[in-house]
Amino acid sequence: MSNSKISSLTASVTPLTGSEVLPIVQSSITKQVSVANLTDGRDVSSQSLTTSKNSSTGYVALNLVNTSQANVSTKVIAQLFTGFDTVGTRKDVFSIQYEPADSNNVNGNTVIRNRVGDTLAVVARYNGADYKIETGNLVQGTAAKGINFTANTPAAGMTSQLLNWYEEGTWTPNDSSGAGLSLAITGARYTRIGRQVTCTAFLTYPVTASAAAAVIGGLPFSAGGEGGFGVTGYSAAGFQLFLRSNSATSIAFVNNANVVTTNVALSTALIGFSFVYFV
Image (cartoon, rainbow, N blue to C red; front, side, top):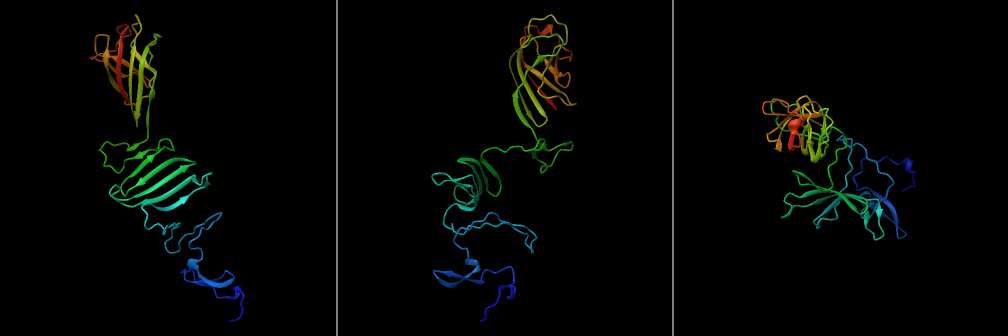
């Protein structure tokens, strides 16, 4: 066979099948190796890896297949890491692995692990039906985004199926009657789930002769058009009190006839209440 320039050779049919052979020099002897075996069994390093669209499927895919762990219980499908620590432990590892089904793992799990430095940040398992996050939290990345329940069949009056808020904490009830009263707050907490806010409080009114309507302000969120309603669980005033929305940020004490209660009626009273409203 005469020597030929590579540029003059007939172009091969692509994609290659893997059975094509190339000449290599091994132990000073020229041998042949198939394309499929060119890098088989050894690590290949690269500064970058680019994938292109498959001409037949139209999809871009990076397939990482582990064929060397057929007899072990956990098969690592892909693992990315930045380096090793002083004792040879891989650091900053992101891995995807498969845990076959057994007596404790009926359906098998696809497991995603993310280790930042030496700290395991997230472990998520998918068993073919559910995702389970064993370490870490789901963190809302954008305000007003959350869990969408539109897969459920709604009632006729449904206006939203998006749960996009949860919050709990303390709030500070204050006198908003205009009398300038100093309330003694024993405790006040709130919980917000979606648009619904529940406030609880224990407080004591000071000695007062004010005839102004008793109004409590300082709600943690401004109330929407629906307002809200509540009831005292305990009152040393000698009668049960109800609460209703007075403004976007305050509530008023009323009696069972919906008549506003005055400050003087609550003078020295210890009151505990729960109030629910919507933002």
